[in-house]
Length: 171
Figure 1 (tube, one colour):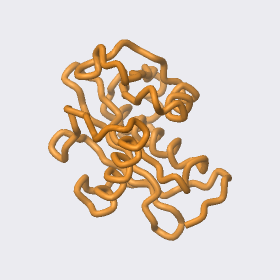
Figure 2 (cartoon, one colour; figure 1 turned 30 degrees about the vertical axis):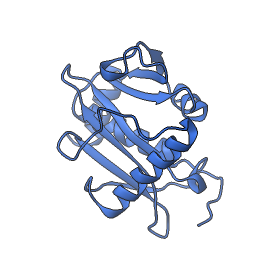
Figure 3 (tube, one colour; figure 1 turned 120 degrees about the vertical axis):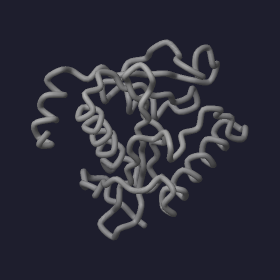
Figure 4 (cartoon, helix red, strand yellow; figure 1 turned 135 degrees about the horizontal axis):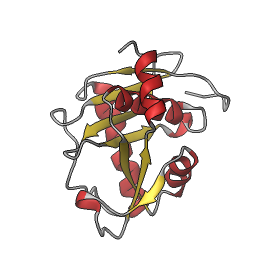
């Protein structure tokens, strides 16, 4: 599959966590991370179908799964972005930005104020992407507090974003 490096808008929609494409994308993400870090998956707090509020899959014009992302609600009324992944051939095409925006819109509809996420020290491309999108580095949270490989980021959603996105969604 070849992608043009222009801003092609993918089709992004909610899909079941356990769909075949969802499992394939998450498996590819875990394999890439294991290769980058030289260790098998060490995550102890993996998201599941039971604790993910929404799971999105981006599809290209031919219907192929090009990326995914999930939102998990946290106990303090905030949420965590999980399983953001874009296939290597779709990177740089707007897929990640589209998924991130839809996750943010979902959080706004839930009237959440802060989105957290964790990436890692061996993922400078992800760190640059999130910082470019307005996420700022924060102290570690939950299982990532003090973790030497974790880079935690967060973005405060403004009241205007919440109000505008809620109106646009018809709520």
